Amino acid sequence: MCAVTRLAATIGLFSLALTVNALATPENPAGAGDGRSPVVAGTDYATSPTVRKIIDPLSLEPPEPPTVTIETANEIDRFIAKRWQEAGVRPVKVADPFDYIRRVTLDIVGRIPTFEEVDAYVSGPRKDRDRNLVNRLLSSREYAEHWAIFWGDLLLEQYRIDGVENNAYREYILKSLEENKPYDQWVREMIGARGMVRDNPAAAFVLRHKADPDELTIAATQVFLGTQLKCAQCHDHPFEAWKQTDFIGMRDFWGSTRRRLGRVETLTNRDGREEQVRYDQVVSGPAAGGVFLTGAVSEKGGGVDGLADLITARDNPYFARVAVNRLWAKMFGRGLVEPVDGFKPDNPPSHPELLDYLAWEFISHDYDLKHILRLIALSRTYHLDTAGPPAVPARSASRGGAGTPAGGAFFERMPLRRMTAEQLHDSIIVATGLDRRGERGAGSPREPAGDRMTGGQTGESRFAIDIRYPAPGGSFLSTFGSHDRNTIHERDPSATIPQALALLNGELLNDAVQLHDGHPVRRWLRKGDSIEMALRRLWVHTVTREPTPAELSTAVRYINADRRESAIERAFADVHWALINTREFMFIR
Image 1 (cartoon, rainbow, N blue to C red):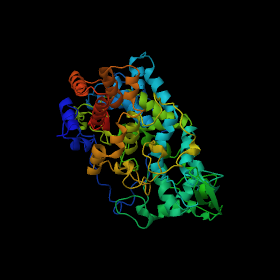
Image 2: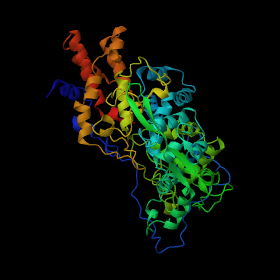
Image 3: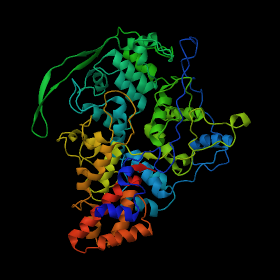
Image 4: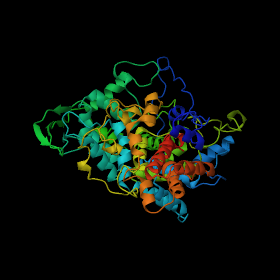
């Protein structure tokens, strides 16, 4: 057994072998499930031709939050607590401040918090500290960079798109998030885009789908309406309500949309290499028709302008609900409607009144994505601990209780979620100081957006937003399951042997933990910290908690076993390597 493995075993960082920890999954990190319920087979629409296809209309007014006896932080909690009370479900305790700052920082900006951020939050005044933290995170550039990855998966952003300048699509997504552009405006821009991307960046959405009416129909209905029409493209499916005629009706909106090949120009990038770029143009005439899924009609008629109007209409029962459900699913690990692309009458939401309340909040605040994220992050429901067994209703529906919600989730505890590839990558960068920004906070500036993505592909010490998508095979992001951006689908959360090997023996982590000039331990020791104090800081900086007395004493002995400076540095690197290889580091708790 090597010294590092002995250290890990002695400190008690790993409850199982290292490989098992690296392969841990949310379903069994500590014996708890993730609360998902099995998929229920749908209606046989072939034999039930009159069954309803369209979900219930949005309520004419926002639902009134119910009165409950449980402590709440905002209206979200009142809707959630009503279900708990009806079913006799007891929520778990609220997470401690260390877990909360780690969770919300990972969810909003995609990385772990630094020691300095944790210390300021935990030791500072309690009044409004959560609100101040969330507002600081949402106002940072890192918010836009992290959520650009989320929206990039849905919008199939790629570095190279035929007829589009390299990286232009990502820059459009980033700028829209940085400006906090109203979501309905953003969607209207993309659907109704015309011209060249250099003049109208939103045209990248159309050109990404080759201006092909079939591709655009599938993408727009799935992303913006939470409805999958892919099967209806070529046939009527016996277990789906939507028919080929519905697909054709939606496709007709794109009937006059075309790609016009443009001129080729030669550009010189920052590396001095010449690149040839073709600037294609999106052309969309007035001749298109279209029949919207809900039967609604637009004053703008057919074509893409009419489609953009119908999709973003306030009375569209899908648009606002689908958007807030995607945000909820990102923050909680599952949606109020699950799967998130499964909006249909026979798949009702777990909390329909809450979904409508959030949709109305979204609409009444001009489709402000940050407003919904702020509501979620400040709710008591989001503050709940991950520890505890899944809920078992004390009162079943047959005994006058609510029973299990239709969606199968009470949200009585937070699910333990595995970090995404990008969260893990960026957290390693921050934990080891490879960002080269010293005591870095959530609002720290980065290089201008236009300068991103111009370097080589191999520099994995950059943040995930600076790496071209799709990530190349064999890279850290690819190994840990980054999205291929070829089709719209959920990521595969499965753990693999290559992932374990990348953490145990991979170049990125093994180089990162060495005490280079930017490493936080080197910075703390230079400031005069003792070995014990540096270790305490390292625990908070890496796994966002204080070390236990046993962990600390064992780590101190390990560091002090050889007092030579080079040996101390190697020992600190070993401890840091062991911490990053724990389940605590890899999961959002």
